[in-house]
Amino acid sequence: MTKHHVKKGDEVLVLAGREKGKQGRIIAVFPKKSRVIVEGLQLIKRHTRKNQQNPQGTIVEREGTIHISNVRKTAPKGA
Image (cartoon, rainbow, N blue to C red; front, side, top):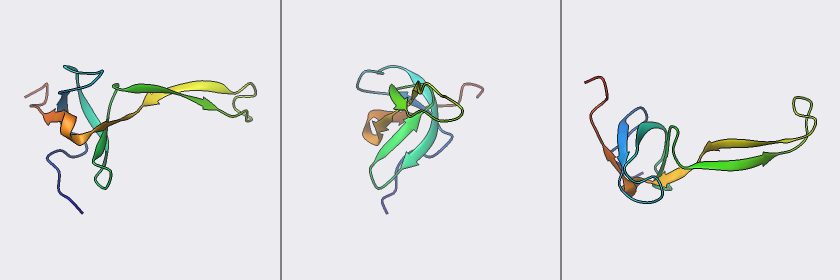
């Protein structure tokens, strides 16, 4: 498994792409795919099937992945 410069919980700055210049906290890291999920960034819409909680079905917005080379670790906001 490869070692990466960021881990879950780190504050990062996005360096490239649609979310360039924005900051957030890492929710998950996928080392085999070299991708990360950053809280509140790269939002995508997912359609869900009908079920008991949502009889009509619904559209859910959630975070998508960003390539690990497009993020840089920053100091936490409180530090």
